[in-house]
Picture 1: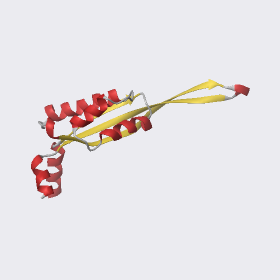
Picture 2: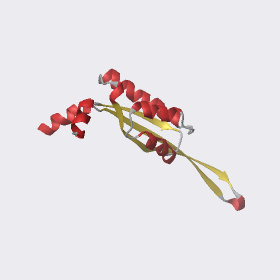
Picture 3: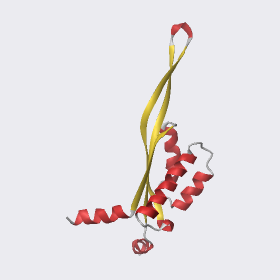
Picture 4: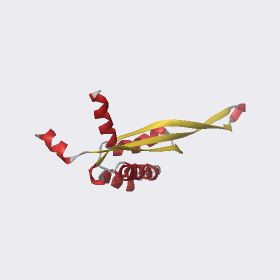
Length: 132
């Protein structure tokens, strides 16, 4: 029973945001999401702002949404937020094709993906206790 109460406390210090139907492959999206994992939100936002990747703009929107959820729904302090998880999943794949030589058919796959970002509040007191 004590485990359930501690888990509910930890969940209160966490907020999520999801984006579905992003028009890029999960592999490309994972390159960008890897940049922000386990980093403070201020640093993550700065990295996404100056990234050259096209999808970084959508990842930044999702991160800002997670920060807003943390602030408004869970009353968390923005300055103490860290990106605890950022994971990518597959979504639908549009299948297109192109006629090729000798009557063959070239497959063209247009993948979509989805992104989930979880931000977590790290308390300054707990960090000091861990260092000691």
